[in-house]
Image (cartoon, rainbow, N blue to C red; front, side, top):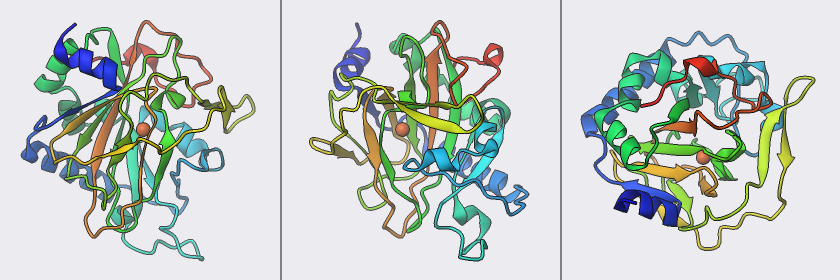
Length: 275
Ligand code: FE2
């Protein structure tokens, strides 16, 4: 086993500095802004929040697997349902097929350094199933509660691995990731899945509570890639600073694993590609 995969297996995550150039980070953020500006907002927002996801799992959310959809911060609307600020700065994230549908996101997701990393981690059978541009705007970017990514991308056996790219410096003040080294050696707590009659639900698989104890802030520079094991509990705090904390994340699964039809995210599985 090489050094990188040994460290990943022991720690449950990897922090790879200088993975992407500042110019490629800037180009991705610029493309995200262009996509957001072109979005034809019809006044029926899809809000994204991890703490109350059943209620916000409308059809727009459940249908976002094969397209580019836009999700808003929950506090971005006033009591009359009007945006408090401009469209872009009201958004929480954009997803979930950016990597397959947009050439700029595709090139970033399947860069030469990603190909090399996937080889080092022995992921030749893996496919990119989901992508999201996380905006985490200054002062409005909300909390992301402690969760495991495998909750949202359940496979049998478990295989989910996430790649989180800092497009800007991430600090405690602007809401960097938090995780505890080695904490992936645990069970999957919940499965977020579709209900038979529409909507989605969170099924408890193991009710052992999450804890912040031992979690450390992963403060990283722009251009850093953080690899996250699907079982590693992680979270981020609200952005209380005057600087945004944009990040781009892709999630991958083993194509040989079973992907249940109950999973919230529906993709055309035959079309999924690797790195
Ligand atoms: Fe996550």
